[in-house]
Image 1 (cartoon, rainbow, N blue to C red):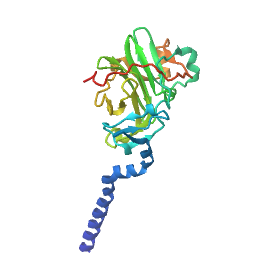
Image 2 (spheres, one colour):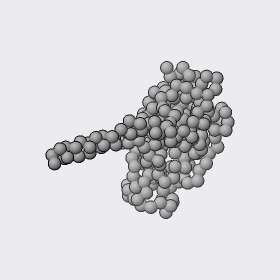
Image 3 (cartoon, one colour):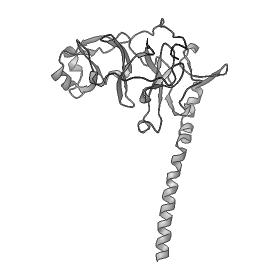
Length: 256
């Protein structure tokens, strides 16, 4: 009987350990599942590019990037979403009936106004390039990761303009493996992954994104905003901007 119990316990332990083994192959399995994105990786003149759209000039140079292709998701290319550079606002009181009391907003405090960005409207843009109190900022929201943040846009003493790349990325070791948008800047065409607050390719590789002061923004419900900041300005619905064609391109050595 004792011999039987010993054998039973050993078997349970052995096979339970065996069940853990596939974890060592998680990344390999992921690569197999996402093999369809391999067509988004382009090789030209010895450099590696990530598909950015039908226009060949839109592909992203990822020759030096720090991500793994097999952990990319989607792949619609740049300008799939419509980031804003000249956002327009309305009085919150005139727009409040479009929202529920419990709806959440990124609430940004300035010296003269409070600006609010509805989370249920942000997925249409994902990125708002804004200047508040003379400070260039970007307001971002990724619905897949439920990630909202406000960042400075000034890096290396230069102002950047950001937009979604059309890709998301996940890393099992970052925020429980949730996938979140990859951004790009229009001045150097480097890629950035906000979940680690860093550039992941291009001229700006490993440069950091800096979060805006935490006492200057927060997530609030409509009810809270109306109670405390009834004069707030809310991002207008239905905005759509043309793709900018004249943006500065920074010299690759400017931030060394």
